[in-house]
Image 1 (tube, helix red, strand yellow):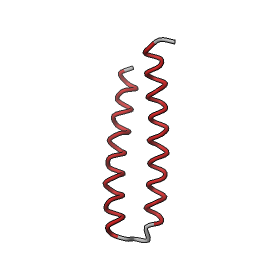
Image 2 (cartoon, rainbow, N blue to C red):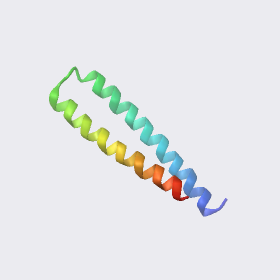
Image 3 (cartoon, rainbow, N blue to C red):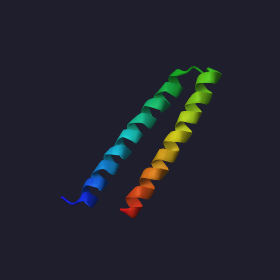
Image 4 (tube, helix red, strand yellow):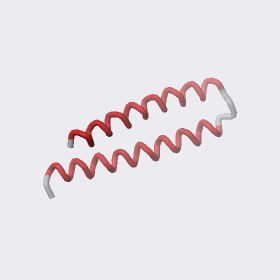
Length: 63
């Protein structure tokens, strides 16, 4: 397996983990019961997850 293939495999693994994290955070938001502080922090976390998703998709495009 070439280094490039390993990179793609690792990036795909990262993408799956990011997806799991996003799902967990969305479940946490559903459980928050509208607690404003929790919801605002979850929104910040989701924004960071979105940036990770964008970064990973850009890497897959390059490789």
